[in-house]
Length: 74
Image 1 (cartoon, rainbow, N blue to C red):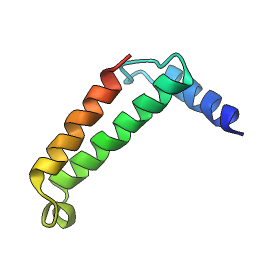
Image 2: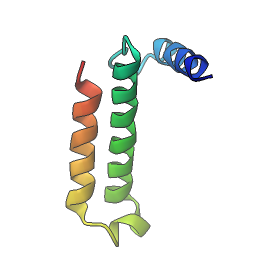
Image 3: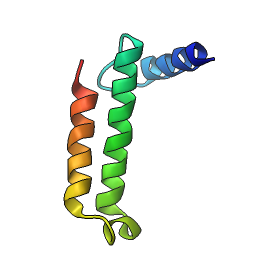
Image 4: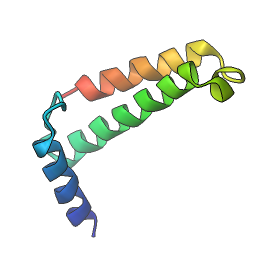
């Protein structure tokens, strides 16, 4: 089940033209996906009013920074 998900996700990444890096193994794939999630959450915390009213803007920026580092690590 998990292998099928990973294979499907890898095929999606291989087919995408906007993806900067292509993870070669499960660990790199997990790190890359975690980076995407953290960067997305950070952007939500910075940009969307219900979130940025209650969450410090620095928290969002920190999540974006961590997410970019995880996406870029190979």
